[in-house]
Length: 68
Image (cartoon, rainbow, N blue to C red; front, side):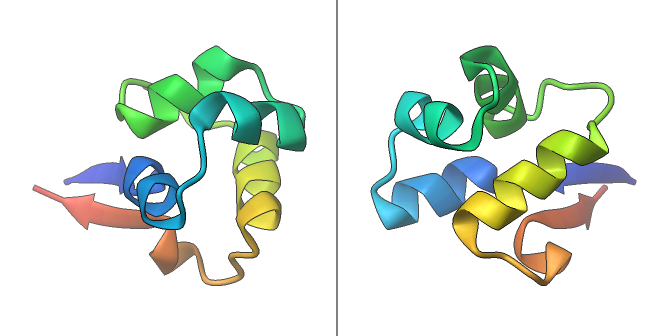
């Protein structure tokens, strides 16, 4: 099983640009791009907290899912 980050789908659905979002939450652009592409081997809790807060997400199931 693999942890899948649904960030790109969320940003697209809300019409939010990755670079603008990264700037707004104080995270480097490459972090957001890698999270969107599911290319990060580890996920930093601080980044997750900033992403969730920036999107108003309180249920982490909205942001993550387990996939085979």
